[in-house]
Length: 296
Image 1 (cartoon, one colour):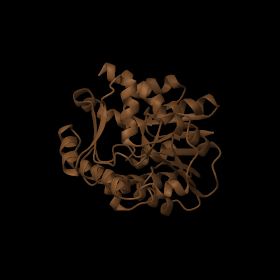
Image 2: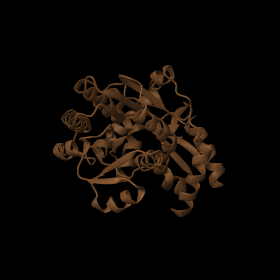
Image 3: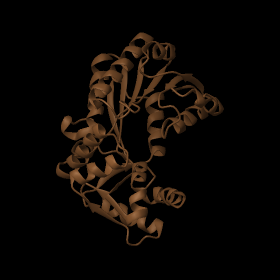
């Protein structure tokens, strides 16, 4: 099969490209960064250098493909309205798919995509799923809904070093669902090469842990027995993230997302369609986290 991947050589797209190439597929990887071209070629893929908001570029790249893998990347650069940007990108993707005649689309969505604006930043995935579903009737369409990425915990590296604390405005005791990119790759591969018919969605997860459990497991890996998770209010969380460099507009939606998880049954649809958990556990990620901690 000829398969097109967006996402350059990111956390998921790189191992996904490697998996597809190893199983005999012809892979093109889209990147806006020309400096990535040689690295993409070295994997055995074909680089396509251009912007994902360029309809003509996407159409030309998608033409002749058996399947395309679509994801949103840094929708607004942290500026402007997140959801307007998501709708615009999804519309561009849909128009390119139609113009190129592609019949199989896999979209990297997210847990929370079933919810409305009340869920903050994750609402962008509801917007994107809606546009693709509406604009691509008759196309085989799979929405992958991974849960929280383990690597997002790297955002707490500095506070762990400084204070031996993971700060969050989320609940400390509610169990959240987490996933490793390595556990997304086989699901994405199957969706691209042997999908279910019609329009489907699939949750992907590796482990389910509360922040208190996360602090305990990371503390063991870091030899920091006093490492703890501390709940802070929404306003303090907002100030901390902005001080750390997160754009204000995105921070507002991000904090809203965590507050929703704290106050509501965020995982109801996930539980109703509960996936088999992948093999990578928080204890495995803790080894990687400890390596990064020592190098930070």
